[in-house]
Length: 393
Ligand SMILES: Cc1cc2nc3c(=O)[nH]c(=O)nc-3n(C[C@H](O)[C@H](O)[C@H](O)COP(=O)(O)OP(=O)(O)OC[C@H]3O[C@@H](n4cnc5c(N)ncnc54)[C@H](O)[C@@H]3O)c2cc1C
Image (cartoon, rainbow, N blue to C red; front, side, top):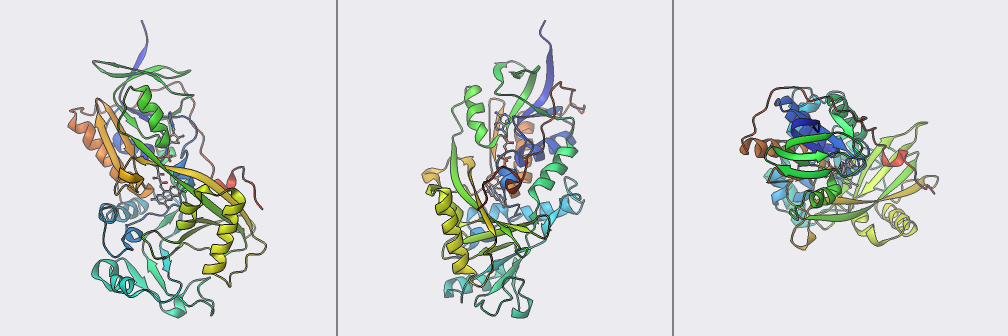
């Protein structure tokens, strides 16, 4: 007779959504295992800018949109976890900066100035005195204003490493797509080159891999959208900086996060509008666009010896009308299959809570047992984009 390992929940994908959810479901006493195709931190999470948004950047049009409200409570949950006082102990995660800056290039438009003076935003960000401006804004050539925003920036690799260690023994590498079949006790998953497991619930947390897994499960919904980014990296003798440049739209014109390298070098990881608009450009054209943007925004910054690289990457999300950015994390449950797209790294705790709610709503009670031993190797930890194989010039 076929040997089957019984689970309450099988999670697919070891990005932030899968790992946070695994940790929470284990705490709740479920018998759960996670299966990852490549590496811990996978695709988007390891390549993210590590910003734990509280929604401020979404509120820049002058009104609090749905996403600004849903995400508003996330920094508090993360801060508690980072202090060792929250739902997961993240004390060992490296915090690159406890806050970020927002900067304007000149005086604010009157609408935006009024908005910043408004009650909601006032509690989230403080204007800095000129003498307190951090580099590179401490230059006499800088004419704009700088605000401090109390939302942390994390090292994504350290975050994934800490979560992975917390769940060691429960994360397994799978070589491909399982063969799924439904029976009265749940989903039978024949893992390629691995054992057969049966799970009452399957949780899809595989980012853009969810589409293929849904198809293998015979589900044609929910539908996924991808939104491309062409990120830029600049490596050299640069100051550490975590900041958004405010443009005229709801999206920051430029978002800079920084990572210290060896020998005093720093890499600037550049996102925002320049990355959104760069998806049609080839590498050289995108680097030219990045150079022009820095020359326009920080013309006094010396970076002649610095080297550039780019990374093309898709964000995977629940499909929305017109392909716009979803306002919230998505968790949908149907026939024992729970599909998640967090939309933001910051939304991971919300995804885990919604998955827990969906499992409880289906009447699956935790068995209160440890996960079973599964004979598959653990996935390695993914590399940060600038540590991977990139062409620098
Ligand atoms: C460039 C960039 C910058 C970003 N910056 C920020 C930021 O600063 N702050 C923020 O809040 N959000 C940010 N985001 C968004 C955030 O990174 C994502 O919303 C989040 O990381 C998605 O996590 P995830 O776990 O769903 O997906 P992923 O991190 O993509 O993980 C999915 C995992 O599933 C695995 N997988 C795929 N197929 C299978 C399969 N068949 N079986 C098993 N495993 C599979 C993959 O290998 C991967 O490990 C950024 C996104 C990008 C692209």
